[in-house]
Length: 97
Image (cartoon, rainbow, N blue to C red; front, side, top):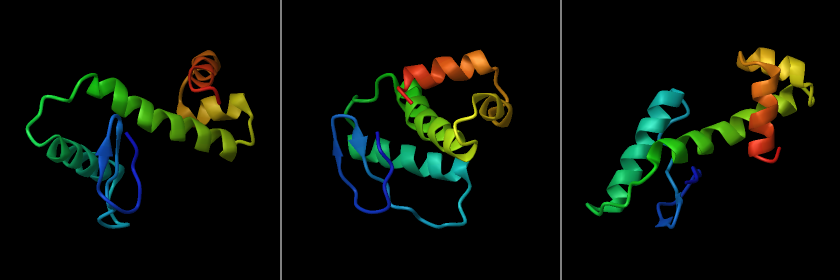
């Protein structure tokens, strides 16, 4: 699943969502993306492991961005995220960051 600025297409695990407004909250963006995802399924029962799919799509850029913001400092990154450093290290390894 991938969220992009333009277009509206879908293949195996990728779909693109147009951004509606720069004023939307993260929750609104997720809701819009999921509504687009279900609309693109067009009644087919293709939604499987949706929780994991969404979490991985959100977590990867979250960890990448926080690591960039903290200039790779895992202690600071863990504090920013509100998680333990060991949990951060597990997530970074999981996403190969």
